[in-house]
Image (tube, rainbow, N blue to C red):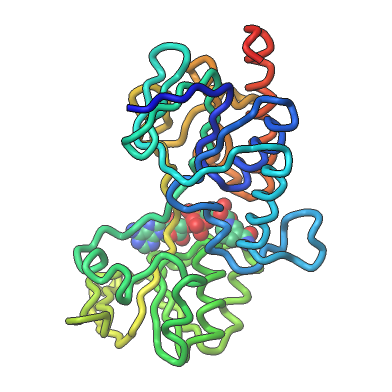
Length: 312
Ligand code: NDP
């Protein structure tokens, strides 16, 4: 396998990875950044971002990530397509295999692999994935304009996506498993005020029905046990995310949900020279701006690590 040695390798291209890249490249670490499965990260499947400081009118998610990328490249970050497929953090320099084809030997590794959508785990959900089932309303809502759809979940994501879908679709059924929502009050109010959203409280998804595509969803009332079939063409899942930390599990300390543990107040993991930032290590805040802040921390920690060992 081809081997390349770098001072600083960044894995992932969301706000955390690109911010780490801006800082690392400006500090002369000549970072190489692999974009991963979803270049630009989760913000590329978002519509308007209204809560990132510096954009008084809001900004479109994909545009914001393009801006982040250009800023990182302007200072010399080598941004590449590719996915980290395995790692060996047992000795310095650390080894990261890209696309099962190439080994990057890195004195410092900054992990900013983010998180991915969770699924319900129903067989029918997997069967119809991409042909009626989606975890991204902003990406796929367009295909169901003028039709009836359902969305499962009751957090901010589900609330935001339900209102987004309501603008496109004739009717949106929101499937909520408890009798209250977890979403922030302002988001809940928006959902409740939207005339073509019907909230199904205390309701679980029993099965997604159809032959060549989704035709209906069978739901179950958790109190009465009553089953009901609702005709829909699209089924959206918005039930949270899972951190993308599987390939690091043999080396890094993870919490019970798979988030990488960092030493509080730093981006340091339990392995020297390996730093984590963004959603892969943040269960609590999970915001673009907190991810960007932690990316800055990771680059500064990496720089200090290299300087202390004369590897800079
Ligand atoms: P959350 O973890 O906040 O919510 C997940 C939701 O899915 C919960 O309502 C949960 O139900 C429900 N759920 C989980 N598993 C199942 C299941 N198997 N069947 C049915 N329902 C299920 O995730 P989000 O993605 O909504 O939000 C993540 C973070 O991002 C939050 O901190 C949120 O505030 C933030 N965010 C902020 C936004 C903004 O400010 N504009 C936009 C989007 C997200 P239950 O409540 O019963 O556990």
